[in-house]
Image (cartoon, rainbow, N blue to C red):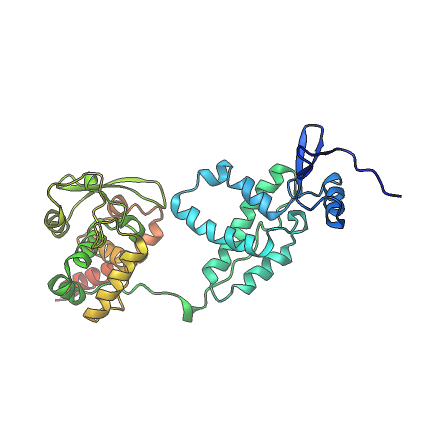
Length: 330
């Protein structure tokens, strides 16, 4: 005996819906087939795609929440990589079935990219907190997960730009790489922020920036070299809303394109060992060599942690202190 199907509704004898208590869910299978029956009883049993507690549904809900909307653009980019990975692997799997061992297994599968692997429990912890708010979980399996340690052999070292490398670049670099270089050293900002500078941010003496990572607003007095480079690059007439760094077609320079331009020029000049982030390192070192305190450097660089400033400035201060000691020794 065929069990009658209640709560079915069709507007045209072709499309069928399960409609009950104000809730309408479309049945995608063809009416009269076994697949239609399975989908109907799944919906009636509360297991339709719209009601299942899947990772796809959780991510969609999370991306509408203030947890996501309040993230800085840099953090969103990092989180999005993990969200894409989770959806690729687990979109239709049930969130309540998550175990701590699953998280550790995902990290282990990405051991070849440790920075990404360590983002997995961080993002999962945020998603699990959101799932707790929704009533899908009672505990957070990702909380307190031990992060992987980068082997010393794989740690990336930012080799500071030497005086010789700086002199060679300023003498031989092409105009666009030279401008990028001066913005990097002169502003002491993260490379991701360099492409965001607009002409309206430059008043002839200072640059204004809101850091993408921290959201901190800074006023940056330009070095003589940076001011000269900006004045030489400013177009006439100048649209204040245009970004300062632009490609050969006149379009805003993206971060990947900027990185490619600088890599090609470093290779051409035999300076490939000095990377983009090391320009920020160089800027901090120059401030330290000038005798600036940690607070003065932080006012320029926007570093929230004095530990990072001491790390960047340490080599420069060691040199100046050794020179001072030599003078006293004499």
